[in-house]
Amino acid sequence: MKETTVYVCEICKTRYANRQEAEKCEAAHIKPKKLTKSMKFHPYKSGKDPTFTRYEAYQVSQYPDWIDIEMQDGNTVRYKR
Image (tube, rainbow, N blue to C red; front, top):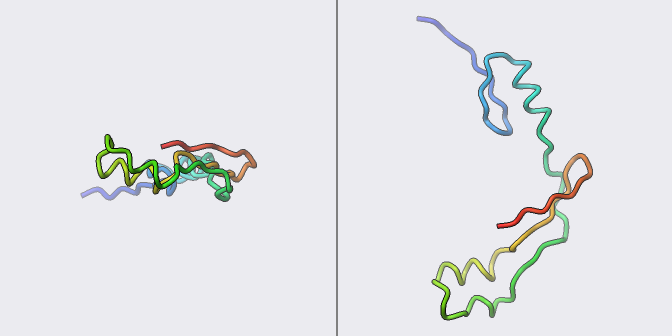
């Protein structure tokens, strides 16, 4: 039987045969620093549209359409659903 060691990037879960490559991968990822106050919600009444399914109505007013996140390198990135 042969035993092998695998190194896994803790950010993206990619597997590597050597430790240095896994460390390079982890260092290459720019991680979120904080959630900014910039986000877009719909008013709760917008979920009452009769053409929406129950799930769609819940999603529309409960969760933001987009959020801005400040990254460790100082850039702000917008994520949309």
